Length: 276
Image (cartoon, rainbow, N blue to C red; front, side, top):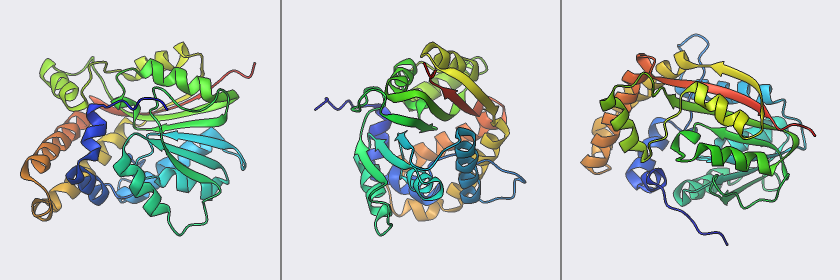
């Protein structure tokens, strides 16, 4: 069995107060949304983003999907139900994996969705064993994005697709103080801009098929998430320690400012492993 590595953000998500914040504010989707009018709820917009990503990936019934850093498992359940694929949803947070299994209970998905511990830097799966590799707003946490993408390339079959969305900090636009705050929060120093992501993808051997700039959606989503958090601050203050609540409120407010200033983006990438 491969050794389990610890990481600043995995420890962050294991905190019970943090888990409570994310589940209450973001809901079952710890992901960004795509907004058509701007009036949509957080929940409606996050489901719209998943649909757009799945349609771009041309998911077909019977295909095998590996989702890495799966959060609470909402994407895995959605893809299995809506597109007839089978999904291995993986995570390094045991707290989130437990919630995944709990939330999947009662649905007839046992034969098509499984939840497993896996670090996306060192996947415990054979070469060429999946049709689609899916990663939603999680590579930002990685201290070695090139390694993550090489692992994605390895486990995909020839012709397989990598589906990636991420909230991306433009290191070229951040002040030194802003960059220091981001690096401290994420416990790493290899910030990558959208152009860097394109290079990481192609350096891993993939062909970049599509890139969508969803920055305006990032700004709107961050504002909505912050507003919902602030609406329930007094409730959360009764349920968790003050330091956890204040640290997260400060970070979420900072991310909302950075998104409004165009320094935090949301980008979607579709890449393909050459067929041969």
